[in-house]
Every structure is written in structure tokens, then in C-alpha cells.
Image (cartoon, chains in turn yellow, orange, blue, brown):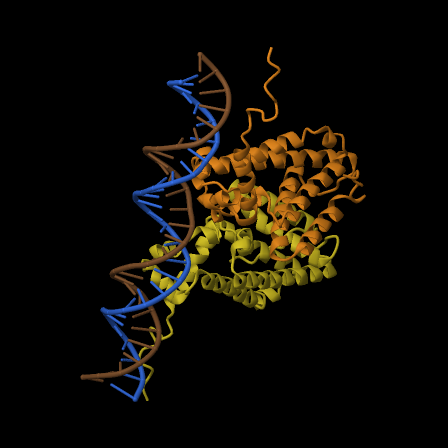
Length: 208
Length: 208
DNA sequence: CTCCTTACTTACTAGTTAGTAAGTTCGTCG
DNA sequence: CGACGAACTTACTAACTAGTAAGTAAGGAG
């Protein structure tokens, strides 16, 4: 019985594909979908543009893959025990952390904020994927708000779904403010959100 | 004495320049700055691209002119007696009207929302102009909030400047939501804003 | 009538864009 | 060894990009 001839480099190593997505994501979130090209990605990865076309024949394919990957991340993240075991207020805090980490990555925007501007010039597949993604995200926030209102940790007026939509657009906009001004504008807006939503403030996070 | 040889067409008729700005604005707010070209404008106006370059040598010049015009509009608008005579709550309502009218113009975004995504790839003159414009807009909203809190018409937690920043990003984001989904998402967010800010609801507007 | 300015058009450049087609290299399987 | 497929590269196209330079039509001023 062969002891599996070195598991060092498993045959499944679609590394380039992942690196393309990583680089494309960085470009998307800093410059917008219309303002980066296959050449930008190729140069950064030290490959030829045609290599990108091999993995993603059209730019629309690439865009769809990007949104789908982000959707998969969300689906996984929201079921993580580390997250589901938290109180609603702490879960909301984790959401804020995600946006703060976006900001720290050289002022990156979120997917929604980045893609909504050129939405009119996107192909239909990308539009649908973006709608699905934001629906999932809004759905999760709505759940958190509903649960938080029940425990009294989160306070707000109106319907949870409406508040969720408002919060997410505020967060998307806050990232845009951060890049036009500096991070202080962002902090103001986040602080405002916390003041309004969490009467007891943000629960402490376990040290990373 | 010559009776002014027909005032029919006054010599000052920079009509093309204005039409270029109008068309460029429409393209900017529906597609984003990176996703339209001089050719798009030229085709729409039935002139050659070089005619646009005559009025605005570089695309950056055009962008700066667009933001400056919008800034001038704001400066004029905020001093209009029709507006200054209103109560703070009604002034806030007028602001909402502006965004609602943007939405009705084929789902146009606002200047800030449109330009912040590609901010990284804009030239420095455009960046500065955009910063100035948003500072002026935020300043005005801060004034309205401060005055409204004093009269009790507007209610909110925290600093007026922080709340102003939050409101404007929410409005920018709301227009983005409207185009990714439909206008219902927009209405939800606007409704949420009114519920939270105006305990007496929106004052009635004089019939247009 | 001539000159000059304004507002263009025609004709062009150099660079970039997404996308394609035809190889090439390399590891694996039979 | 030889075929094969995966992951590329090289070489290309057609369209579009911002921007420029030179020419032109028209109107007013002297």
C-alpha cells in the first residue's frame, strides 16, 4: 500500500485562480469594476492577460465569480459557532469589525458600494448575483436586529428589515466617506450608529 | 442710436458648453466617471469628440467643472428665500426631495456616491473639488440639524456634525440601493430616516 | 474688405481594452 | 514511451480611449 506519495502539494492546487480572484477583488474594492483591466491583474501576478482569460473567459465571468465567492464567505461566516454563540449586540459588533477591517485594507469599499455605481453597465449575470448577495446580507442583519430587539440589547424604531437596509447603506457610505476624507468621518458615522442602536454600548470582544 | 440690433440671440450663448455639462452629468450619475467617454457625450450631442476637448481639454477639467457647477447650485439653493423661510424640519424635507428627484431621473446617483468609488483613480484637482463640495453640503445639513434640535422639530442622539455625515451617506447609499433593487428599498430607508428624525413627521409641502 | 476670434471638424497618434487562436510546457495516466 | 489534458504564453484583432494638430466656416470689429 503506497503511503500517498507525499501529500505536500495536493494535486488540487488552483492557486492562480485564487490569486486572480484576490487581486481582482483588491482592484474592485479600491478602483471599481470599470477602472481595472485584465492587464492590471496580469501585471500584479506576473502572468500574461490571456492566463486570466483562461480561468475567466470574460470580465463578466470574473465579476460573477467574485460576488459568488463573497456570498459563500458570508454563508460560511454566519454559521460559525464563534459568531452564532454571541449575543445579538456582539454579532452586530462583529459586522462592524468586518467593515472596519475593509477600511484598514487601504481604504477598500464593500462589494455593494463598489458595484452599485457602475451597475447600469454590468451584465445581467453580475446584476443578479449582486442582488442575491445583498439580499442574503440584509436578511442576516434583519435577523440580528429582530433578535436584539427581543433581548433589549438593540433599540431602533420601525421595521427590522427597513432598519437593516438603512444600516447597510450607511456602512457602505461610511467607507466611501473614509476615502474621500479620512478615517475620522468613518469613525463619526460608526460612533453614531453605536450610540443609536446599542443603549449599553458595544460589548467587549475577546482578544484576537 | 442703434436700438440694439435684435436681442433675439444674445452674443453670450455658450450653449454647447452647458449641453456638454448636462450630458456628462447624466452619464456620470448613471454610469460613473470611469465608464463614460468623450465619444458618448459627442454622440449624444451630435458633435465630434474634439469639440468636447475644445471646451474641456482633459477629462479631469470636465470633472472639475461638473463638481464646481454642482457646488454653485448648492450655494445658490441654500440661500433661496423659498428655502431659508422654512422651518428646519421643512428644510430637511426639501433635502429629501432633491434626492427623490435624483432617483426619479432614471435612477441617478448623487455626485458623492458616484465619484467616491473611483476616487483613487481621479486626478488631484477633482479630489479636492469633491472634498470641498461635500464639506459644504455636510455643513449645511449640520446647520439644519442644529436649528431643528433647538426648535424640537428634529430629534437625534450625538453631535449634529456626526449625524449630518451619517444622514448624507445614508442618502447616497439609498440611491445605490434603489438601482440595485427597486425604488421600494429606497422608500424603506427614507421612511426610516423620517421616523427617526422627525417626531411630528414631515411637514406638508406647498403644491409645486 | 480684411483680420481676428470663436467654435468647431477632420485627421491623426499612441496607448489600452476585452477577447481569440494557435502554439508550448509539463505532469500524469495507461 | 506516448497520448492527453491542464495551465499557461505568444501573437494577434478590432474597437475604443484620451488627447493633439491643423484646417475651416462664420460673425464681428476696425
